[in-house]
Image (cartoon, rainbow, N blue to C red):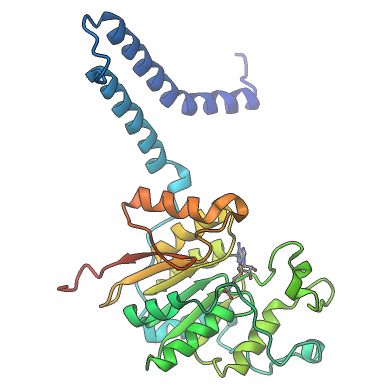
Length: 318
Ligand SMILES: C[S@@+](CC[C@H](N)C(=O)[O-])C[C@H]1O[C@@H](n2cnc3c(N)ncnc32)[C@H](O)[C@@H]1O
């Protein structure tokens, strides 16, 4: 028997999965052309019904591709929710083997390279933070993309000012920045140790300076793996900021994964982020936010340069 080569099998599999919508589409086009040619009356001012039917079918195909494809599938159902007062402990246990990373900080090899305080961000003190924290009064805030901690520490100060003394802020960042980021005007002085830009250590130092080591906890990993783990561990938040990679695919996956972690409290929940109006990264953030809103039937709201989705607590009476 003739053996089918692996590459042939692979391509025929690809063709068959690709072929279904294409065949469907061609059938619709064929049906359209038959209907159009056999139509006896033509009304130039009104779209014929069979054309509307074809358009509706095409939209259905497109929507089903958007809604059922792998690019829309972000893993399993999350674990059972951990109570907010246990979230810090859970992360300390799972990420740092139960010992605070601030114990014996800073290590001697970076001690004299860190600045006492160096906080730099982008729109990190915008009015949106205070507006949302006042509205939601979150017990747990998750921030995806922390950098030196400007927005995280601003949120820490706001929670304390608003009497939310127990609020924990979970920061996710791989603390690598992005290629060439230290060429940025304000980053020229960034010191390196064997090619490491020391973002994590400087962030930790900033948290010490802000007296926030008991209220901030962090996960020094890629956003995808950290968000997946939080989901698995049942760590949810009422306020989630998404501000890591700004290209479409990064923003799209971070928003989808973060949305799974949103657990509206009595005042509802919000997922939000910066750079809705920026043209950078081919408007990646805005395209991802708008697509997500469309797929989930949500309304995008804006506050300055920030976008947000408000989700009411479906169990509350108001
Ligand atoms: C714009 S900065 C965050 C600024 C911060 N929210 C503020 O306002 O102060 C983006 C951060 O996202 C982080 N980042 C980008 N892509 C990431 C990824 N895939 N996983 C983890 N962190 C990422 C970078 O290291 C950088 O620190």
